[in-house]
Image 1 (spheres, helix red, strand yellow):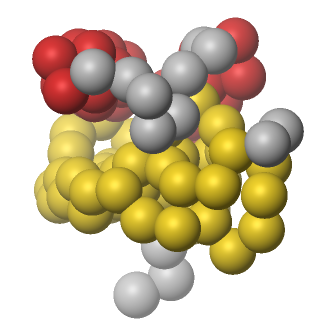
Image 2 (cartoon, one colour):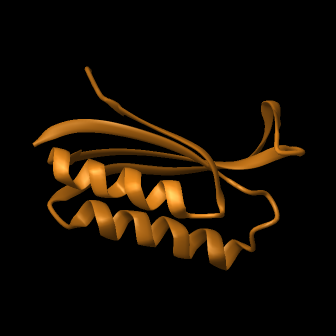
Image 3 (tube, one colour):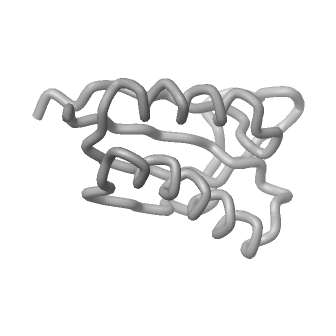
Length: 94
């Protein structure tokens, strides 16, 4: 298993319960063949630039250990989730 880090931004108009459901869903995907080492919902912040007429977003940062297959599945699910504005998965070198 390798160490990874993912940061994703959720639309600001999503309710708090839906934000919790999304984070639980993504943690469940990581849990199938991996483990979450750190999970941090950073809250609503201003985006660096406007994306699809959206200026704010709810930032979430997750550090986890997983296999490449789990990362591929997480990437696939993130792409088809409408509530996600942007996301980035990188290998953690530290």
